[in-house]
Image (cartoon, rainbow, N blue to C red; front, side, top):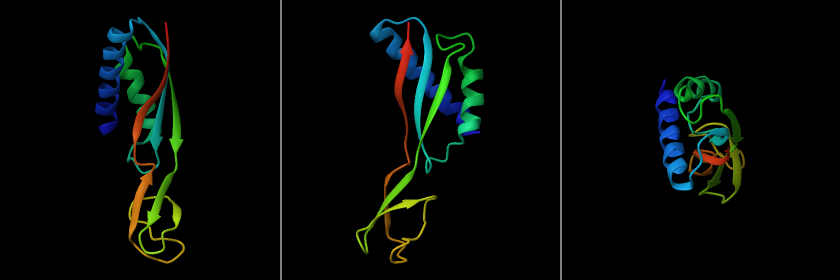
Length: 113
């Protein structure tokens, strides 16, 4: 389950930011998670709760903002919604799609004390 290591990495970033910006507790974390990122939101929620125990994010609420997949077709130049990597272009049937959104995971916002 790679969500555990992702949560550990998120917590490292949060701890670094706590030192830089001088906050002591995190109340809410908003994460953007792309539909094409191979991250399971429910597994992420479970792992975050475990990883955050005993840290400045203990009892923090995790809010996940799901970002849909978006690609541009090299053949017909259309921008199309995609549900998974290697989808075909619904307009022309080409496999030459370049992902332009929905493959990322990032910390969007924090509520801190």
